[in-house]
Length: 146
Image 1 (spheres, rainbow, N blue to C red):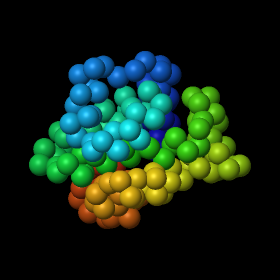
Image 2 (cartoon, rainbow, N blue to C red):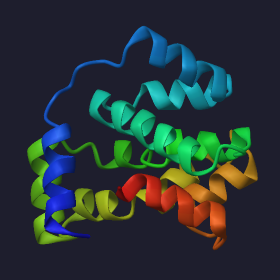
Image 3 (cartoon, one colour):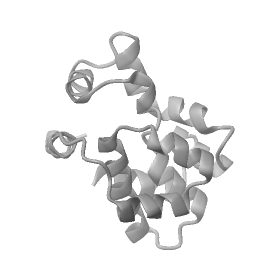
């Protein structure tokens, strides 16, 4: 990942402003009730980021089905497990997976897939966990990396 991308992502993550009521309604329409509950437990910065990723993903793949769109919204849900704040995430990104919480942060895809495996469509779980290698997975990754 490029330094400029990481810098832009870090700057956009400074704020903990909640998402708008319109965005919240959109998320509620896409996710099932239990997925929505898990999503609301994400930090506000991660919620906002997930909505940005969903919008990019929708523009890259307008025919995406609900399970794929849910993956865009839930792709970082595993970051909840590390329970790191902004500065700790920056440090974890720089120093790598040292210690359990930093390791959890770096392994958030698998942890996220494990977290939602019993509440989400298998397609959503596979996309979040990175266990599928197809065009949709590539577009979802691109939407996250832009």
